[in-house]
Each structure stands twice: as structure tokens, then as C-alpha cells.
Image (tube, rainbow over all chains, first blue to last red; front, side):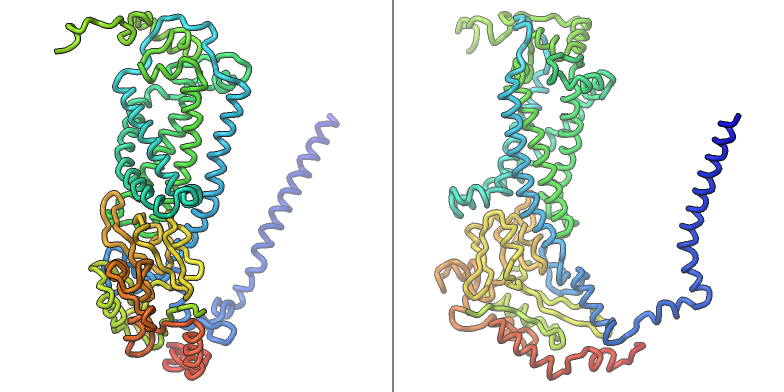
Length: 365
Length: 196
């Protein structure tokens, strides 16, 4: 009984404290405004354009101030690159970003990712197929999917090399190959980048459309992440066709970064569309380069896990078939589904590439 | 050594476009490429002002800073020039320049622009002086002949000044002193009153 009244007292104290705080805040804002009741607004602020030695605001100085902040005027000259702006301020800001953090942080980020992957490989080594190869294989990627993957992958690598050359070449390649040598390469690199980019975009968009169904997040992924994807502890958490990590690469890399890079890339690549002001171009270049650098860092991880990092993973994308023991270890739920749906594992020896050479008379005309 | 500078006196510029025409004619600049242009602020309103704008030959030039192939260089006279043999036409200098000075002959799909062209302060380029290559790529080299840029030389009201920055500044300062230094003792307020 006594404790109940004490609790009531305490809550009353809290309430009164809260209300007094609120009252103080409201009054602190409201009371000084009372001045407006006795003086009209003009007296409070003074005339709109008061001209004095201290506060010069004549139309001319305002015009120059506007010009300084990028206001356009009239010009009779015409041409695709003629602007009516006297001073555009975006350029200096963009220059600070491009020659500053974009190159320094971007460069160290990529080097850092490579170092981390090397260290990881040095300490943990390759993820082996624990039970050894069974010699039986199942289909993982169909022919058109593999073509799509390798077309996109190859163009990604070419675009990354040419793009990074344009950003870092001045610091890295000019000291090595000289100005004219680099300029010749950079000219080719720019055109390869500009012409291959749209084709690469088609590949990325097709991937998004065709593979989204494999990458829908589900409860299994939560468990997969809780167990760190099997990297720590040596256990192999369950996964469907795509595990949690692959889904992150799909949605974070291919989908998000991919779309950002594609949209900003098209804006940069087609100045003839005509809506691109210098502001839009500078922003697009910054977004394009930063998103691409993050994507390349992400790609290092994807490429490592798919080749050196995991035994038996690459063949799923090269010849389209994986060992059943690899499938059970890394994608158990997918494998079970596959078998349940009537897929019959085929021994290595019966695969086309491993068939004994056929007599010449049967192969060609 | 002198540091070459342009200065356009907005109180004198009458937007006659003679500087633009002189530049285009002197250097045979192709259509659509404008090394110099006149911008009129508040056009048609009382107090409109015109300024002739071209490459300002910045001491710390943003175009040179962002160029992926490092094709810009500053001469001993402080003139910012570029090497068209190195230029890859990426367009970066145009995005970086506050004055919109870099120009390109094309604006096509896949970022095809051609080689960048801009005001050379009538100082040619990295080719042999007065050679045909210099003429076709960069225009005439008047500075080599001891002459100043033609745009400024042609200016009928001497609004556009070009030359040694110290001398240009000196001329401009004398003008300001003759006019009376404070904006409120002449110009808009003096002519039309405080409330106009």
C-alpha cells in the first residue's frame, strides 16, 4: 500500500517536471517574439534595401553576386559547349572530389581489399570439398546463363581496367609510359569504355531480370549470415541455389551498384542528349566513379570466392556442371530440390568433354 | 616574368562582339566552337552589364588538375596552353572550368567530342612557332611576334584588357580612381536615387 503511493508520487513528480520543461521551452521561444506585437515588421527589419557604407546592396553588386553564384546571362554565341553562365561553381567542387578523396580513398580502398583477400587466403587457404569429389555431376548453370555471365564478366573487367586507367593513369601510368604513350592508350581506353559500356549494361540488366528469382531473400539466409556463411567455425550453413553472400552480391553489387553505374554512365556517355549541364555531368562522373570503385572492390571478393577461394565452384560457371559433393556442401537445399525434381547426377566420365575421341569420319565433313 | 591576364571592364563593354569576331577570324575557329563569348547580365533591363569571357589562364587551373592525360601546361608568361596531340576529348576540362572556356568540335553519342579547343591568349601551342601545324591546331601566335591578343587589341572601348597582369591592374586602378571609387557616389544610386 505504502509502496503504491510512493510510486504515484514519483510519477507525479516526473509529470510535473516534464510539463515545466515544456513550458520553459515554449516560453523561451514565444516571449522574445512579443516585440512584433508592439513594433510592425518594417521597424523590426528596416527597409528592404537599406543603402549605407556598411551595408551596400545596390542592384549592381547584387547582379555580380548572382553572377558569382552561377546566374546565367544572355549570349549570342551558339555551339554545343557555349554556356550563358559567367561562373560555374560546380567545377571546382568536382575537381576537389576527383583529385582528392576519389583518387586517394578510392585507390587505397582497392589496394586494401586486395590485401585483405590475400591475407584471408594466406590464413584460411582454399575451401576444399570436404568429402572429396564424388565423380558425379549435376547441372548448375545452363549454356545461355554461362554465356551471359562471361560476356558481362569480361566486359566488366575491360571496363574496370579502362575506367581505372582514366582515373589513376595520370599518377600511375604516365610516369611509366610517358605522356604521349599514355595519351595513345587513354584515347583507345576511353573509346573502348564508351562503346562497351552500353553493351555491358544490357548484360547486367539481363542478369537482373533472369536471376532475380534465384536471389529472393528468405529465412535460410538469416541463418546463413548468423553462421557467418561458414567462413568462421568451419560449419556449412544451409543454402538454396544462391547463398546469402551471393544474394548480397546480386542485390548490392549487380542490382544497386550496377543500376547506379549504368544510369550515370549513360548520362556521361551521351552528351548529345543535351540535358546534361556541367552540374549534371560533374555529379554523374563522381557517382559513376565512386559506385564503380566500390563495385570493383566487391567484384574482387566475388572473383576470389568463385575461383581460388572455393574448390569446385568455378566449374559450375565454366562447364555448367558441379560435383554433387560440392553441391551438398555449399547448396544443400538446392541439391535436394534438384534431386527431388528428378535430376539425375551424371558421372564425370560420361560428360561430353571427357568422352574418348571419336573417329574422324564421324566428326566432320 | 610577366603574368598574362585578361580583364574586362564591365563599365566600358558595349557588347559589340568585336572581340568574338576578331578571335574567330584570326584563328579560323570552326563553327560551334567559341573561344570567347560575350555574356550580358540583366539583358534589356536598366543597369545591364556585359562581360567578354574566355579562358582566364588561371594560376591554379582546374582544367589542368582534372585532365586524365595531363595535357595542359603553363608557359613562362602564365598562359595556360594544352597539347591537342595528347587530348583525348573526354570533356572533363569543360566540366571543371568555371568559365566554360574549353570547347569541342563535336557533341556526339558515345562521348565523341574531338580535340578540345580553347583560347590560347594568341600564343599558339606546343608545335614549332609559326608552323602550319601550329596554325591549324591552335591558331596564330601573336605573342611570339610581340603582339597582344587580338580580341583586346580590337576592343573599341578598351573594355577588354590583355597583357602583363601588373600593367592591366594598373590601368584598371587608374580608371576606378578617375571614376570615383565608391559605388554610391556614382552609377545606379547617383543616377536614379535610392528608391529606384
